[in-house]
Length: 311
Ligand SMILES: NC(=O)C1=CN([C@@H]2O[C@H](COP(=O)(O)OP(=O)(O)OC[C@H]3O[C@@H](n4cnc5c(N)ncnc54)[C@H](OP(=O)(O)O)[C@@H]3O)[C@@H](O)[C@H]2O)C=CC1
Ligand SMILES: CC(=O)N[C@@H](CCC(=O)OP(=O)(O)O)C(=O)O
Image 1 (cartoon, protein in one colour):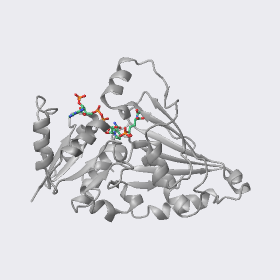
Image 2: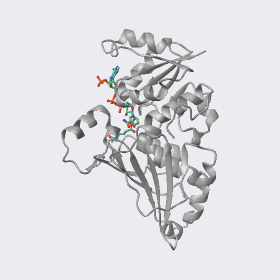
Image 3: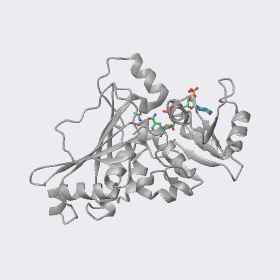
């Protein structure tokens, strides 16, 4: 028996990439609304209530409206937007961090944001293990490809080829900060400094650590090798989250990056162990969005979590 999947927002950047990953999978039947009906409320309401699984690839307000339109108890939801990432009654769809069983049995799953996937993937296990403090004012720098901003930002970057670096979130209070704080369990909101570069996809998320300063203030601060060993152990069973034990001199984001659903984690450490740089490399449309949605769908449908993924 196949499960029916309705992608609301299927014509958008995330929706299209989910459909690509599901194409040719006999376990699922994809329900789509044609161009004329894809924003028609009655047509959407019918599709939202008839499907076994609904995947929301919509702006936040439209995602909230879509959830309110679902009357059937049977329908299970994966929301790619940031509307429900800290909402009560929603499971945070990061199976390697919250546990696969939690996602597999959930009726409402909120996909993590692309940047938080890197930040939480790096820090959550280390803070939980007591190797790094909960109450440190962490900083997160990140660069993303422009598809991270959806159709509008793709059009903007493709129209203006002269942008070399686009720093934003300068007013602080980026919408990803609450989920970054909540799902690592931090006392203080991290200071988040995102930027966009003229590459279609891909991202690099970094958490710099002043380990010697942490220690001098009496907080836990394990050595870089111990941080790496802990990440290796945490993600030992995952084909998606890959902890890299090498320390390359350079990490590049290539403008020609092919779609990929892995999350690669690195730990760089100063020779004397006084400082470290935790770095995550991922595809904002892979583990950052569409790949994560398909992984969560696989788990919720009782299938191999990696089916259809690009690993
Ligand atoms: N892009 C990324 O890397 C990531 C995106 N996300 C999140 O996923 C969601 C989708 O993002 P993304 O695909 O990038 O955005 P896009 O703008 O590329 O796509 C959104 C789609 O939703 C459609 N839409 C908007 N309002 C409605 C509505 N009321 N009813 C039906 N369809 C509607 C849009 O229609 P139209 O085509 O007419 O504009 C568009 O096709 C967002 O919440 C985003 O924040 C999450 C992680 C990463
Ligand atoms: C480059 C860019 O604009 N990125 C988006 C985040 C993309 C993402 O993770 O999506 P959500 O909006 O669903 O969290 C931003 O900073 O708002």
